[in-house]
Image (tube, rainbow over all chains, first blue to last red; front, side, top):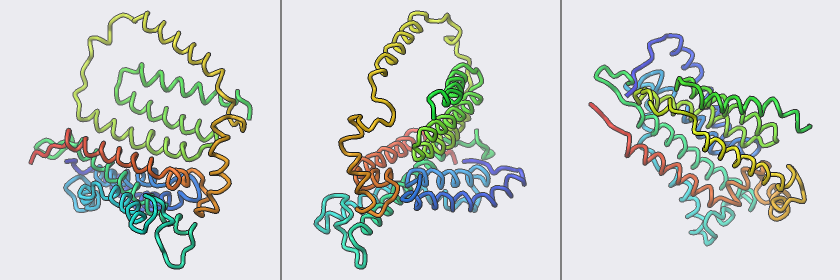
Length: 148
Length: 176
């Protein structure tokens, strides 16, 4: 458990910065097909924003419900990744051969592009959840709830 | 872009690596290690690989610094009496000889960016020519990671998941 930070400046700056960091993480995730970035980096940036909510608002506040809920999503990203691969096998393609999935209105290359987006999202979810889970594992508390 | 123009960056890298090892204060060592990762990211960007630079900056300078600090706050700072013993000259000389051997081996490596190098002749031209038409993905690195070599990335994701589960099993305690 982590106690809340008691500085007003830190709280105010974090409230301004947090949506920007999260939006930037999502941007990096989905812009990974056109520039540097991708699932791994986007997941780390989004996960670090969740760590910031834990550090600033404390583990017991209401502001970090996303960080607390994220602990229950361990393995969700991996399931998403493997699920897309399994979906390809269900539609009689090879494992993780995205062009086997029949999407109406999309040609072969667009289907593969959408498969890349889906697997990148899986990687990002897995990385973000793992980072917040490691931070939660490393944080202990004494009787007053302070980080020891 | 001459070879010597990257010399200041390499000197900064060496200074940061030596400082992270030699400084006595552990929190200071963690921050010097973070700046080492930042200079390494600059070196990757200078070599023309922005994807690797981005990952190094975010993971090396950002996330691992935070995790090191968390681990430091959980452990008791303790003076190690073994740290004061004499310099092991045999090991230092052995490392020097090993470094010279590695430098001698590096002279046989192909030049950076050589199109005749074996690594650049087998599959890379196929990827470079066909990735945009096959999957509408202009970023070649993402195309290779997520489509051509997607199974490797799946296993890497499984490794990260395993690391998270292992940390939770070994370290997580709730004292309510």
